[in-house]
Length: 307
Image (cartoon, rainbow, N blue to C red; front, side, top):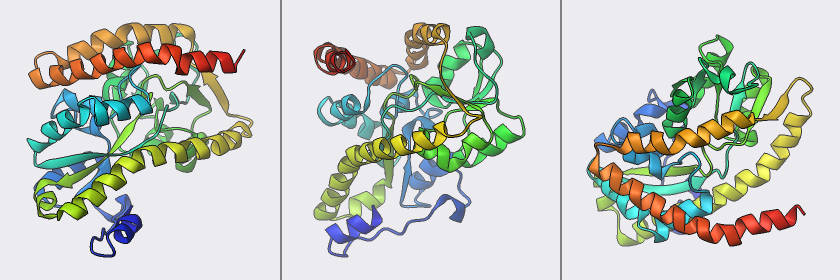
């Protein structure tokens, strides 16, 4: 992003990239750091901020919710981005969608999940609403930054964890500590990433610089998804070559119970917060409309392709 924005602006807008190992900030501190002006921007994901408002969930990913193109459509054309902007403006931050992983994997486990009963008591790293629903199934979900996932699996603090998909998971080395890799990622069917920008800094940018940032970030939504699709296919082949690793589907009773619990858990999360309820209603009104179209388009095509 830094190099492309510099080129697009003719060198008048530059971004200094600071990586995680170059700062004392954890991934869970980035929102406050941007809001305070400690840093100008951060690349993150909205469900890390749900302690501030449950509405943030709907701007990252929702279990059994929108896939990537649907989420893009809601944000861009269904009123979603206006709600997201309103939510962050109260806190001195400007959000922009900046990437989407597509459908993720279900996660890694140190021991096999053979039934719904084997989920109970598991200590697992599943943030956001995905973790809340696993909690309703009897698991013990926690939110940990990426750098802590592998050590926690190694020392027994975690029995399992989700990260992203084959490409990212392979690079993190999760195949070195877990022998069981589960699909599908029904907890994160289209995970949108974000760029957070300090409001005061944003106000100082020229209209042309704002337009460059907006153009790049919206474009990155689809570019990231395409990149993940390309790299995931290669990484999956590498993972399948590991003899001790088993790539499995979640048992049917786990999927069915998770799906059954999803609506009630999500409704309970937004209760008592009028703005979260507004976002929830907007999200699901758009999704219901999209599902009617998907029945005749995406789903019908997938069925035809496998006849």
